[in-house]
Amino acid sequence: MRKADIANEIFKQVGIPKNEAADIVEHVLNLLKSVLQKGESVKIAGFGNFVVRNKGPRKGRNPRTGEEIGITPRRVVTFRPSQVFKKYVNS
Image 1 (cartoon, rainbow, N blue to C red):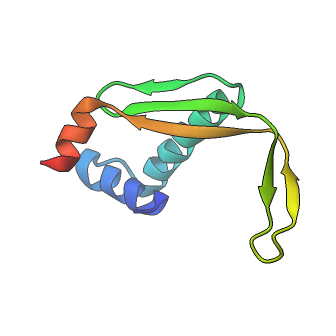
Image 2 (spheres, rainbow, N blue to C red; image 1 turned 180 degrees about the vertical axis):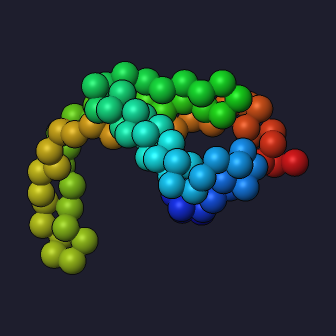
């Protein structure tokens, strides 16, 4: 499913114009991105948690050459689904 598909579903179910539905989807996603960029967590009840984790530097290997390379520290976003969401997906 793409952003356009989500906006189309909002249009069908709520009845607002497609361009407004697309704007709402875009605003919600931008809000999520900005909160995560600040390093804060996003908790959506009944759905799950988006959490920013800091990963430290580590050593890795080039799979072709076997040469050891350094992997720089970075931040990653992880998603942990809620129990309600897990139960829904597995039913």
